[in-house]
Length: 218
Image (tube, rainbow, N blue to C red; front, top):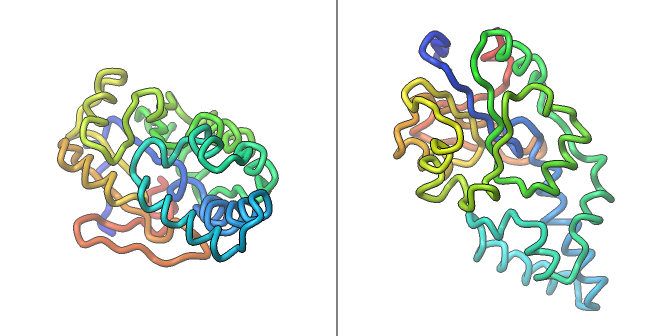
């Protein structure tokens, strides 16, 4: 990955799940744990529960409902907040994230967490990781009413947090988010090489891939 010219960057926008945090927690929760709980609660075979859930996930992926704890609690008749608490020990920070955040703050850049995570999930993850102390501001897509991968998000972000797109760095594991930000004019874009430490490598021809935060830690 070519070196970043930090002199060109005033604002650093950071995603949470899959970028700063290991996506294994979320993948395990939605793909493995929720189907088991749904199967037990509704007395249906596990394979049937899994098939139903995967279909619903696909239908809603990319929308705010996909990220909404309250929506899934109603949709599945499960206490999603409680279930997340039960497996919260799996929440983990990617290597060198703390070092990077400390160095980023030391450069005088404005460091923002910009996430689709529902406030309930966000609060749990901040409680477990204490990453919140590094950010100048935390902006949640649910507060803006549109997901990061949807057109209009980056304009709404501009309304609540003025930033210069050509002097902004965005790091995100979601390529649809990066593409949307690129259309808006954000100049410096980095994808995440392996969002889930136990999952597949993610590649994208248009964006440089960050293998480790050590690469961009001063």
